[in-house]
Image 1: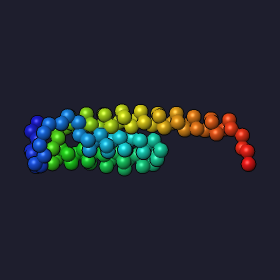
Image 2: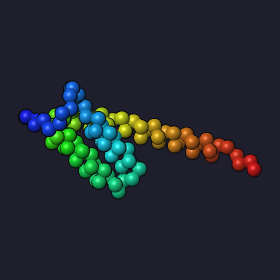
Image 3: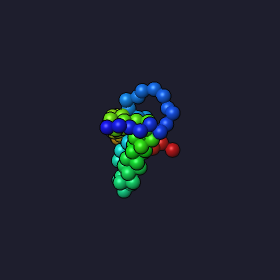
Image 4: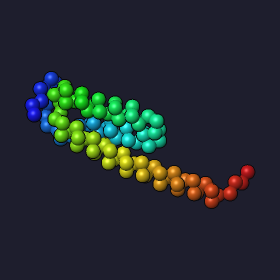
Length: 98
């Protein structure tokens, strides 16, 4: 597979930060806004495709970035849910004192 270089960017990188950010954003927000899931992941795929099309990343860079973004965003989602449960439990345990 040959990548046509269209950018003057230098250096080597395994994961694409663009793919990491977009796939992370797509998964995290789709957990809270399920109706937006198709649009969010479509945008993430388009951004990933654009990185290969512009010749700044190999497809494996996009796949690695997408997996990394999905993992990190899922962990943050779990953290947010635990924090929500903790805050809700603490608010129920306190009495209202005017």
